[in-house]
Amino acid sequence: MGRKVIITCAVTGSIHTPTMSPYLPLTAQEIAEASIAAADAGAAIIHLHARHPESGFPSADPAHFMAFLPEIKARCDAVLNISTGGSSVMSLDQRLAPARAARPEMCSLNMGSMNFGIFPLQDRYDEWKHEWEPKLLDGSRHVIFKNTFNDIELIVKDLGDNNGARFEFECYDMGHIETLAWYLSQGQVRPPLYVQFVLGVLGGIGAAPENLMAMKARADQLLGDAYEFSVLGAGAMQMRLASMGAILGGHVRVGLEDCLTIAPGKLARSNAEQVEKIVRILGELGFEPATASEARQMLALKGSGSVGF
Image (cartoon, rainbow, N blue to C red; front, side):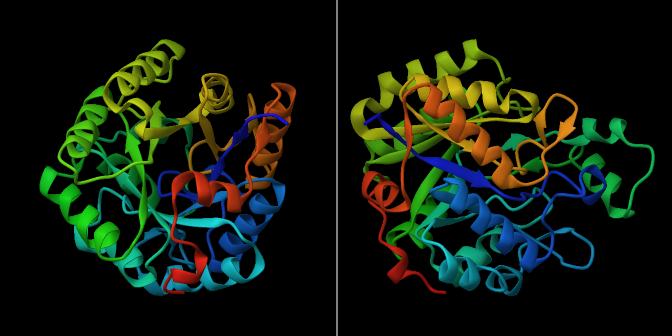
């Protein structure tokens, strides 16, 4: 049997907008169906954001999350990972509200404040379904995504120490790895750490193989055997960097949050289609998708019986 690789699927996110793809899940039912199909295709972890069902605008309303979380849990065994990143236009309390209400097994945690530039996407479209879409994109010129040291410590204590969640530590640059290593040295986070190397967001490290090698080398130096890692390549580098990450001994993340295509110039028709593709690639490389149960064991998760939904 090959090494087991955890596949995470991020089904909708808060970056892409309804104009960009008719296949982007927006309503609670669409998000639920996309998540279940991705799990059936081989994803062990589903990374979740919510949307306002009428407009598709990113939402941090716990009610919007609760409209799909119980159904996904009832119909598949995947680990449900709730974003604490939300969107740069949300306050910290807004971003944390869904996870505070749901008390999930896993949450994402961005390891620092950063410029998060999605405004270049404006140039690809001349007409929009909703007025808010170009405004949201252009807004990323003017604001930062804020996660101060104090914010990180609050999230770790509130969602981790008090509610038992483990984290997908999202590292968009080398300094984020240094920050995570410092918290490990202080005993404020504990192994096994699940580190998501995020490459390709404007304002963070670029989506290049050399950058992934550098990130892994530095994480190896600082984190040693205290971590597992996964690779998120934004945009066209999604499958290439995910495949490289698996070869380097890591896990993978796919999904329409990170990339809307399945091949150059061809929109993915579903999240499951991307999961199926990475499953095929992993198989050709001699790896096997980890089950949700195996992912829980590898990452020391508390189990779906201890969540709040």
